[in-house]
Image (cartoon, rainbow, N blue to C red; front, top):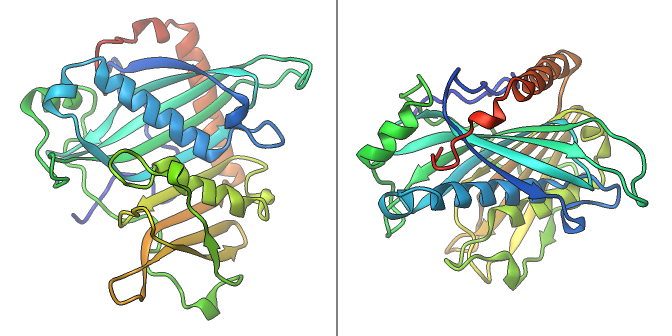
Length: 306
């Protein structure tokens, strides 16, 4: 795997192919999804992505033919923040694929409401995401996507030669080269799924802990990229190593190998978007509104996976 069409440069994520089918679902923003400023947290975004993926698969026969998938990377572009109270609409489709993996795009839009705790009107929210999903068998090994699933997914995109390339620096710097002392992130039993893997959203809870000290990165449009390199199982200690750059925070989640030496389990970058990138993102916002008003939402096929 040598090449990937994800947006390493920070350009806007590719839009949906004209006429492509997609899956749609709605979710309410709850108080457990937001921070003290009522902003929907990144770990809550990860849970929305998991929920719409599960709902998508359950709405089709893929639950029988292609039931096992793992996420290798997630890109989250917060263009217009989502806050509580609101209803989130998730649209999910295939952005690109190969025979064993696929980039799944999810667009999250939100219509905000007001209440006594948040009485001021807010702009509609928009978060664009892309996740690199790998189809695996019941032993967890990469497996070919079934013929029926490939036919369905490939009809949504013209990019059928997806390749992998890391977007984050995989090698962690020495502790002396970090911006702060390493710190331990304590995991809880509730952070793990039935397969004894750390839930994808739990990784981003650690990121949210870090962003408390880097609020300038998220006070406007920003991009998160998280890449999962090794599984984290119950009982594994996690050490966080961080490097702060002028417009970006880099984070490595370190776990011990069999000899007790540090190895990287996941890499994270949170990058402030430039004025030019934000302008391009605004075009995406405007187009999403036009699509919605034109009846794009009514075209969603709830029986189709993406």
